[in-house]
Amino acid sequence: MTCAHATCRALAAEARVAKEVERLKVEQGSEDLEVLKPDKDMFDIIHSTTRPLPENLKSAALQEPSQAEAVAQEALPDKSAQEVLQVYMGRALRLAAASANFGEVIELQAAGANVNAPEAVSGMTPLHFACFFGAIDVARSLIAGGADKNAVDAFGRSCQQTLPQGSILIQLFDANSSTL
Image (cartoon, rainbow, N blue to C red):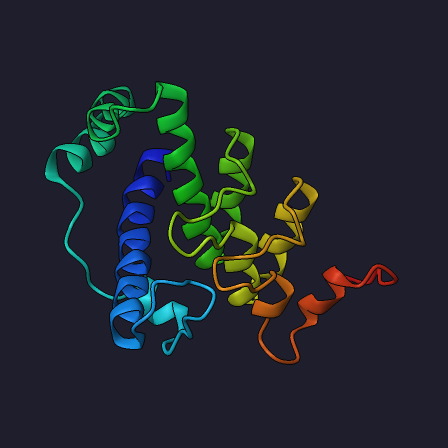
């Protein structure tokens, strides 16, 4: 699995999350992200169908990563090549964390992905996603790589607050615990 392949999947997942936030704004009649209340499971949002990635970016990313960078810069002309790469690697890392893909998380961290890269609309970091889905190894790797355990998303939730009830991951946030 290359970074370019992960980026394609991450772009689609991030678009679904942004679309869901827009739906919540309309249905709940508020632009304030802090008062919006999610009414769907994040897994369902990420894995639902959305419009496909633009064909030129998808084909460039799958065939030749260096071409993907040029095409991506066309899509994000106000950013430098390094900023574009970080945006895409952040998206790929969030998706890998959400899907508990430990190997991909390790690859992206080794490639220099920002472990604290927030999603543009929800503000969720890779650690938020790992915690939400109970991905123990992914969460441990992100924390070891410098992820901020105290990061807060646009809904005001810390990573710890996204944990499923009764999750063993709570031990990662307990300063006195070294068992996980």
